[in-house]
Image (cartoon, rainbow, N blue to C red):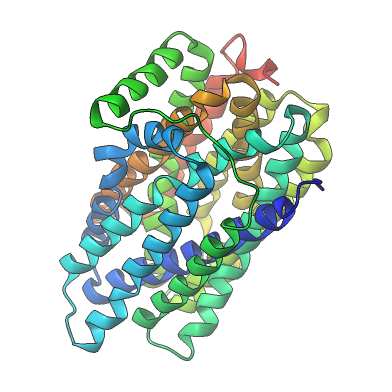
Length: 398
């Protein structure tokens, strides 16, 4: 572990608390919409619109992150997310059950969440030497994936006691814990600069030019974008649709399937932690891309919830390979002053493709069996990992 006071506490607990809140949100929100509408198309559309903040302003978030201390950004974004979600049970208490008000709240929840990942990833190199970054990212991912495992289990247990709309109060609780612990973390300092719209646009342009002049990093982002176009829709919309409308499962069954993904991610992270420094990070990234996509192909054969849980576990194993290696590559090879902007662009590629992919899946599910969609999109996503092997440099990156 690391010697700086409260840094270990920050690494272990902030991703855990934040991600538990996010996991409960992911289970509760998509199930609430599916419950209110019973429509794959509307659920896909709603899932798509809630990710619009990333498309509309995500590109500029990195510049904002680079202008402010990262710990301050993390605290602010998490507490605002919690306050917004706490409004959902209040609306239901007053019997206001409008789908579009829920979409608006989800929109702002996701908007305030945009700085979290770029700020966190840009913060680590300010506190940790380069040779310790893979270890640090593995610790962070263990914390995060523990949340992906236990968050849905917590949600499933809460659903036996509370109505789904009341789960958002627990999101507020965990977001508040994350914000509080962040205030105790070692502070990072940034050089004071003029803060204006013109300056934000200028700094964003600097980040784009850097990537334009470094084609290898650009290609990694393109692979990430394409992979998420094919993976995120099935993950966000396809799994709950499969559970509820094809396997006649409950919200608790959906939460359990999500928990098995988290369990697989923990196994994958432990593997990366042990072997990560023996192989090029680029090769681990491409392997993760392939497993993440190709594992969805096997959902075509799912006939019951037990099979779904097993495949969810196997799918989760590949995710840490691509996430930990990609983050470590960027942290080690990109100037610290540009990290917020680069990680913001990566976040945009993930969130924007989540929006587009969710909408596509919702529409396709109207006339295609969801299992067939998993097969087709799994093949396309797996090919992204194979395509990366054709690049002369990526597989050798460290």
